[in-house]
Image 1 (tube, helix red, strand yellow):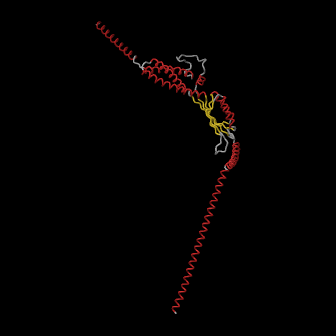
Image 2: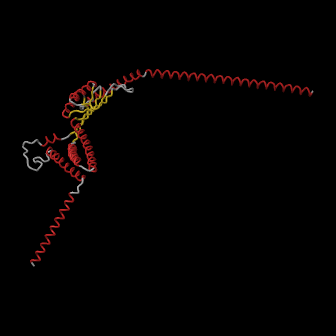
Image 3: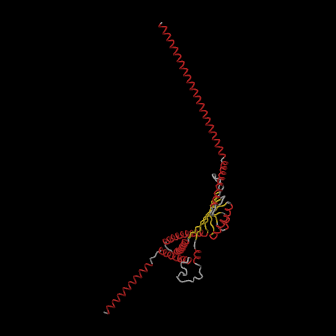
Length: 363
């Protein structure tokens, strides 16, 4: 019995040793079968994790999401740290856009002051579209301008106050776009691509076959293209964040639009004065229109006189023709009557002669 148990233990041990050897052989063969593509994928995955981890940690710490803990989950002393709201505001990427409509009685002075103020604050005018009011069909000298201005974000309020002091602000709106999450994601992706680029350069130095070199260079080209695109997007975001955009519309007026609520009497008096002013403006515009169009009026008057003279001449000629035709018709009618009368007289004479002749023959 003991002998049989001993043989069973020996067989079990041999089977166990055989299974261990087979598993070891399979593992070694699979580890040796990785190609250059597998190494590239593995490097990219590691690079992404390494680049994303610091960004995520910094982002969470900056916005207070892991306040009081470090990256390893250990408690920290928060007695001397920056307050959560202050850190969050400092790290945010905010794009500010302002729209302002301004009235002025001194157009040239305001436009010049705005340009000087923009230069003084370190900004620049991105676009300027000015209208000087001198068109053929317009007789008013009012002018206006549309400006797109870029102002450093920390000087934006100062610029708005200056414009408000120089003119009458009739409308103002402000829009803030938070692009922090997008910006952080772009940074993380950029860092991952930079890490991958370094790994690809190392692999390119170690590559031996042409196929591996071509594969690495293709991937390296794609990575560089993506890096350039992301760097461009980040620069664009930085410019929009660092320089706020102001869309400024300047309108030249003779009377400012009231920005405060008026009383009933003020509205009546202002409306009455506006009506009188409109009548005066209408008379003035009519006089200006008449004086401006005198050459056209003279030409039209000459044309009308010529047309009237031609019509009179045509009418006179037609009347003369009709008179001549009527005279000819009367003469023709008189001639016909005379002919008929002569014919009747001749007939009567012939009849009388025939009668006399008949009487003579009867006797």
